Amino acid sequence: MYQDHSYDGILAAASRAAWRIEDVLPDGAELDFTRNFMPENLARTAGIACLDADERRTLNQIRGHEYLTVFGLVEEFILPFVLDHARPQLRGDDARVRALLNFAGEEAKHIDLFKRFHKRFTAGFGTPCEVIGPPEAVAAEVLAHDPLSVALAILHIEWMTQRHYLDSVRDDTALDPLFRSLLKHHWMEEAGHARLDRLMVEALAEGRDEAGIDAAIDGYLAIGGFLDEGVRAQAGFNIDALERAIGRTIDAEARAALAEQQHQALRWTYLGSGMTHPEFVDALEFVSPRAAERIAEVAPVFC
Image (tube, rainbow, N blue to C red; front, side, top):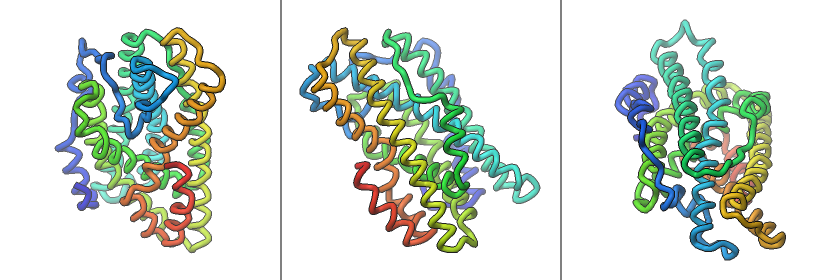
């Protein structure tokens, strides 16, 4: 799937993988709240001693809501970045421009899909679940960095998405079928985005000396640190939503331990699983072996 990194090849694959929101999330389709939404490898909810089985499933579903809503949030900075990257090339290679614009169009579609999912989830779950943001503030913070730093962060996210589906979701038939289908269709289009973003990373890294690469890696790590603070806050929001949903307050000591455990679960979901993906590591090696070494040194903290 990942071998053809040409713009023509990416366009051809995108055409084969294309889908409509109405087919993926049709009117009347309902989430099954008797099932987990997230695979245990990402949710890390199965062994929480201070919760009973129903409460663990409720937290798992809150994690599912957080997962797709956070994806909608990050795609709101991916979309303008891709458009900004495409704009200077509008009179250049036609396949490149078409691939970049298709990338942007698919990201806009995903944002719409995840907003519709949020409404469907909220109606069925019955309890509000807060998510970090607003998206505009997150986008402004991320996009303020060096374009190569941002492209690396996006490549990390694209390969992270691939890993989540292939390693944890695809074969987990116990998950809610509708939620699993949403993740499958997101994965299908993100496969092409990962290859296209690899080309953007290579173009942005071209001609940079080691100092310039080091500066870009500094920026990538700064984005990661910003997102890590966000997922720490999100772990707290998730526990707040859990307490509202189960109608009880978790005692302070157990809550503190749960918040720490769930922060690490979110770290793996959004940071560690991308930083250690072999394709992302390969892209870092292409940019600079020193860059790959720097990321490898910090990655274990997020796993």
